[in-house]
Image 1 (cartoon, helix red, strand yellow):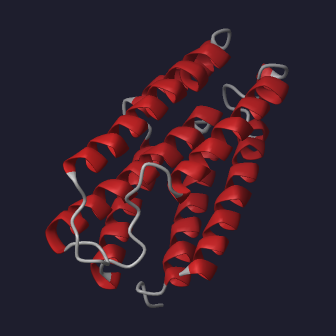
Image 2: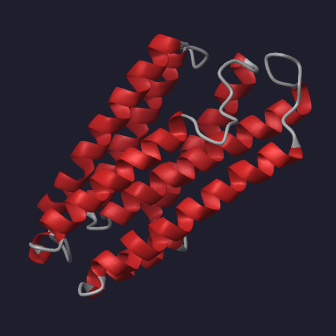
Amino acid sequence: MQLTSPKHFHTIEILTFLLITLWGVVQGQVTVFYIIYFFWFQSLIHTIIDIAYARKNGEGDGKKPSPALIFGCMFIYFCYLLLIIVFFGVMLNFNNQDLVIINLRTLLLRNLGFDLNIMLFAVQYALYRKQIGNKDLQIALFDRGHLILHISIILGAFIQMQFVRKHPEYFSGPELWGSALVVLPFLLLKILINRKRQQQI
């Protein structure tokens, strides 16, 4: 399997995410916050690696991203992070101490499944970027990574308010079914976005 192929890279990415996240489900460590924070972190890594590559080698047109563009990208990610922490990490789980603790551990990178997911993605994407060069760089104030975040936040809010808050007994402690239901729609979203992206490359 050649990592330089977008199809193969995204297949590896999806499989890695699925297997490690399912392991997290078994451990009772997956929440809505886990998934949205993971998508945020993944998009941030994607952008940072692309910026580092473009600053060194230039984009497709030979130009390098300006400091203003880089600052704008990072500021938007910071705003997303505040929203995700306050809204999904605390507010929507205020009455469920188990979920708040899991979210806090995930935020501080003390959730083994989450940490493995992030580290493996960073290594995979760094190798992928090195191999394909400046093709399909993700450096913009709004791009596909942000689109995934937007849809994830809307979907996450719906799941949190309609299911998690109404049935807390299925989304805390050792219960597995609640976490499994949380993962499924986000996994389908990621597969759909990646498939469309492959068609455009």
